[in-house]
Length: 321
Image 1 (cartoon, rainbow, N blue to C red):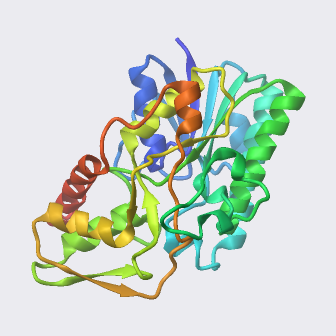
Image 2: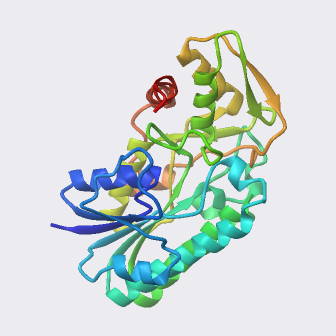
């Protein structure tokens, strides 16, 4: 039986990843600063611990591990990342976690590690046109991420690749593009756009209105969680290092995304665009590299995943859970 450690198992993607690894026959240890918000984590062993603490990391990274999945980071949606108020914490906390995890992987002789990077590493100047953004993997340089979150992710990509070159660790790096789905954070300030818009629609009475930050013409692509986990597993089982995009090529404006959710809800709601943090003007995953190397592409359209996510968030609100 293969043994894996999932750092960030208390998070949205981490919880789903733990469950998939269990389905694939792994023994799994999860670690996070908190339990999974919706108990969506079936780890054989779950440790509450702060991965910024070297002692904690030393205790969870053991010599018998076959794989480590490093998803732990200080992160959130636009309201958390783009205000500038959390920049120091974002950079310090995430970089410290990665330094601690990699040092222990090297010392304990763990052979393979997955690192979850982000589409936020791509240069802002390549994403100024909402109709034609460029997120091809080799356009990351010259670097100009739109946030300190993106800068830290780019630094950590280089950190993992350096450890791979110098110490022979098999590294796999994926750049996630807006992963969404049920059992993800949907309130409190760290939720991302899909959950935030689903929440606003679910909370608003028929005939009312919802607010959308910016002019709503900014574009994004969104990937359902099950698709993301499948791509991660394929990457880890491959000989391909990356970095590689894991996302969807189906691009939509934020206003049109809000209209999609409103249509799914069956309500008649209007959209009011207000000033607010919005990030780059356009972003869409380019999947040519992952299709070539892993034969992977999303299997379903955006609407199907949003229907599932809206239903779940609406149920959370109506049942008070």
